[in-house]
Image (cartoon, rainbow, N blue to C red; front, side):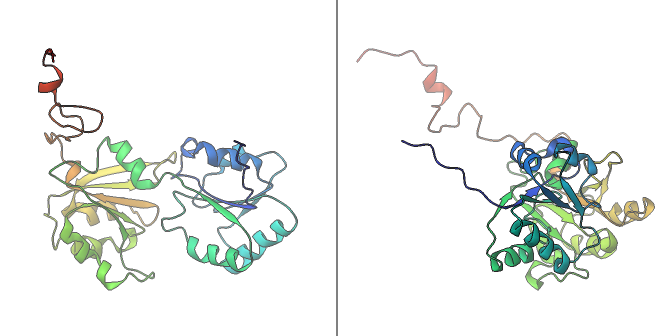
Length: 269
């Protein structure tokens, strides 16, 4: 059996994580260290991540670029035989303007690879020391945004999603927080716990805890307009006694029999 040959991709689209330079994946860090050119959004990706790059790397901040200038720049470097990294905040698959970039690369016939990253909602749960899917309380996570300049399909309106009372992670919505709060209150109780997470993973990270009825007021008092994640969930309640069945002594699966049978003395024949 021969060792499988590594596939070479001239463009690597890498999720940088929410801000902490140590939260990039091992694969993402390695590919970043091999890049000849790195396109990154300086307003969302900390410069500290560039410490993984080689000294001679070309670094291009894309915060002021449009796709019409970004894409030709990537194609030009690839045609020169350079290895290109597009470094994106969080995970590229979430609110990363990824779709249109992929279409452009495919049209140009340029192979690419996507390397996932840690999303802000995952770091938020870690900071809050909670599980977002607690048995018999909440088993669904919704990732969404409020309607603003970016249209949201009508079936995905916040007032509709709120009916599930799931762990709801609200991105890109600080400027529309009053309307978002009103929409969520159509189904969530007013005392549903809320975590308002600002610039997670950055040195100036801050998290405010409150209730859904306070979400807009707390946001305005802190003058929050961008880089905010709202986490609305019954899982944020304290002193919950619910327990997963996975590690319960009476729960059976392929690798474990119930304790009442496992601990019983073995008889003969």
